[in-house]
Length: 129
View 1: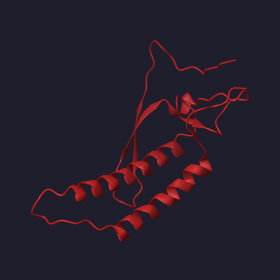
View 2: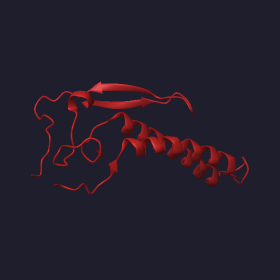
View 3: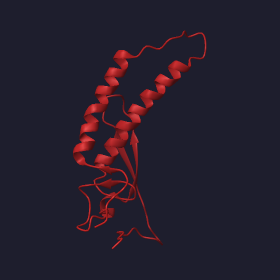
View 4: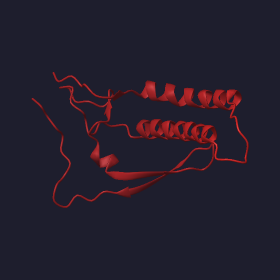
């Protein structure tokens, strides 16, 4: 049986992360102190804004990974594998490019999909057996 050596995800782990990220965000806003004035370029403020962006991105990545309940490429879901331990694809459900629309902090983003069309090369289940 093949053993996955990359990044593995689970439904419960993703849900745990989605519960924890808002707590980290709240703690960040409660504890942050940005020195400086509005009179000059403030690198501390720039770095704080990056942290906020990273928290939003982390939340979105977890949401997308939870939504995409399949294993494909480097995205291995432990619940989605073949009996041989290979990544189990679900192309009939997830053959689309996803774009999530931000609707505000604390609000659910909106998923926009664009179907993928495979004319020459088609997705297949990989096997190392």
